[in-house]
Image 1 (cartoon, rainbow, N blue to C red):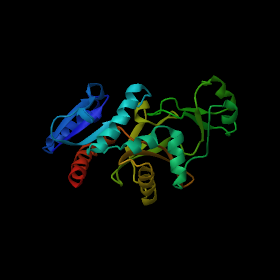
Image 2 (image 1 turned 90 degrees about the vertical axis):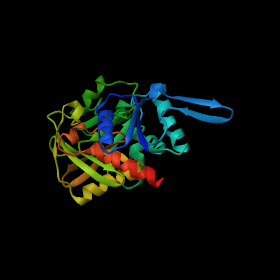
Image 3 (image 1 turned 120 degrees about the vertical axis):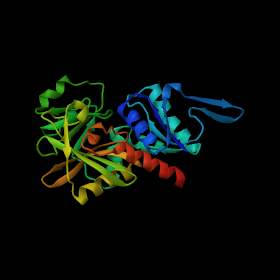
Image 4 (image 1 turned 135 degrees about the horizontal axis):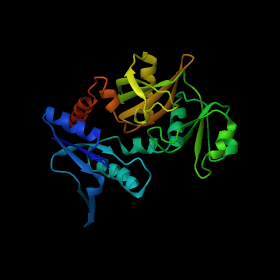
Length: 279
């Protein structure tokens, strides 16, 4: 048996760590760049020119920036599933988290708590949210493009051609939580703190251990399950004792979490190995 990481970043921390832990577990691991893959459509069949022999499980990590290559990568995930590979995350999971409009709608349909929000390309509509509030693009990750709006006049400087989310300030202080969920179980919780509006580790946030209540853990599991993501980073804030889901990332990085002494890569390798055997 072998596993593969299908990615647009073959030298990333994720790829490096998965390879290291697979070797320790005695499992072959292949790192494949999406740019080096091919589909042959011939004689009525689809032939995959992607992996070495023996690969049964695939970590699919499509590019997060909207482009033809990103769309190719997402739909390649669907084809791999149809061809019998165990793929994490699934094509359906990526569709459900492709854009925050779809993500938030799915979460609400499953009665999961979100901060009050207005989604619109219209600054006039967005200005109906009482400041302070967060302004975030409907499409994006790693906290890019997220800003704190402290007065409505600040909206003037933002792009008229985008769609935005005006989201109420539903958190206490300068922190929130990143909760990693794998296979319907919480495997790590990190408190992210920052003196800036955005707490993402990639944006300068600082991670620390956090003991969450069973209710908060259950909320994160429900969110990942609702969006059909076997592996997800669920961002949760707390205000006045109430928890809110801020976002769900279908391909979370875990460098910050592993710096706290939690071996996420090992958990991922062991999980997909078991799932491939069940399949």
